[in-house]
Length: 135
Ligand code: 9YT
Image 1 (spheres, rainbow, N blue to C red):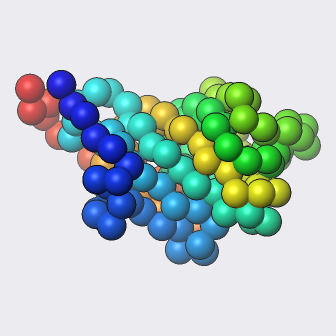
Image 2 (spheres, rainbow, N blue to C red; image 1 turned 180 degrees about the horizontal axis):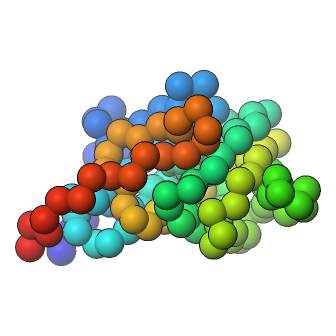
């Protein structure tokens, strides 16, 4: 069994910061954990907007703290985010994520992230290289 805490992750390579300082991501589970997904607690800092397009991944996001909104850019629809809201990018949707206060989000990615990914200029993460399953 795997057991990890946020306190153990802080200050290690599993804690990743956006280059534009919009967010920080504590990566609780990664590709090498062989769960088939990665699991993150992401902090989105207040009064930020992040343009995202996970063209290689699916992501589900569950808000546990803070207020914000997500806009799907192809159709301009805006969805409020409060604690208890989940959104799933089931169509690799291009979107804008806006935080009105500091948000804490639990995020699941498939395929799993490998470790230190930050957004590429188009808002995507690169696809982690295939590696043989270690178990
Ligand atoms: C909600 C979202 O995608 N925010 C960007 C960071 C990402 N969740 C991550 O790498 O943890």
